[in-house]
Image 1 (tube, rainbow, N blue to C red):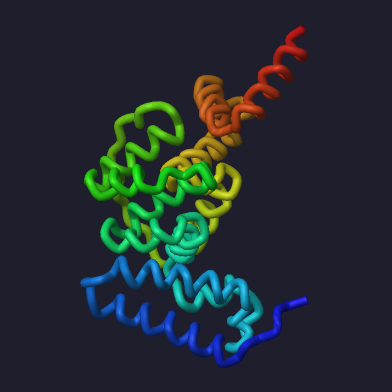
Image 2: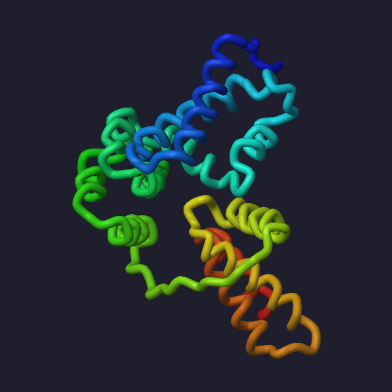
Length: 232
C-alpha cells in the first residue's frame, strides 16, 4: 500500500527542490551546502511518494523532469544522505559533495564501523583527485592504475541511450564502480560478441579477461572451478 499522502508536506518539499535547482543555475557560492539539503529532500520525496502530487507515475518520472540531462547526480546526492552519519553530513559543507560521494562509498562498506573523524580529516586535507584515489585504494586494496581523460562529442539525441547503457552496467558491476569501468564493460561485451565467431581470438581472449576482472571474488572462483571441471 502506498503511504498516506501528506499534501502540505509534499508541496513544501517539492517547492524546496525546485528552489534549490533554480538557485543552482544562478549561483556558485554555497553550492555544496544546498546539495546536501537537496539529497535529503529527494530521499523524502521517494519515501513519501510526493511525486503523486504532480500526477506522475513514478519517482523515476519525477527525476526525469527535474534532472533531464542525467538522473545519476540525483542518486549520488541521495546516496550521500542515506549512507553518511549526521555528523559527516554536517561537515560535508566544508569538503564538498563530490568528496561526500567518496565518503559515502566507505560508509556504505563499513556501516556502524565507519571511522567518520579519520575520513573527514582526509577529505579536508587532500585535494579532490588525491582523496578519490585514497578511497579507491582503501576499497580495492591496491593503487589505482594511471588514467587519462578522453573527450568526444555526442549528440543530445544519443545521450539517453548512452546514459541508460552506463546505468545498466553500473547495476551489474555495483555502484562503487566508476563510469569508466562501466564503459569498459560495455565495450568488452561488444568486442566479445563481434569476435566470438571467426573473429580475432586474441581480442576475444582480452575481452573475456576484462569481463573476468569485473566479477566478484566468489563468481571468479566459481568460473575457474567450472573451467577446471570442463578441462578434466
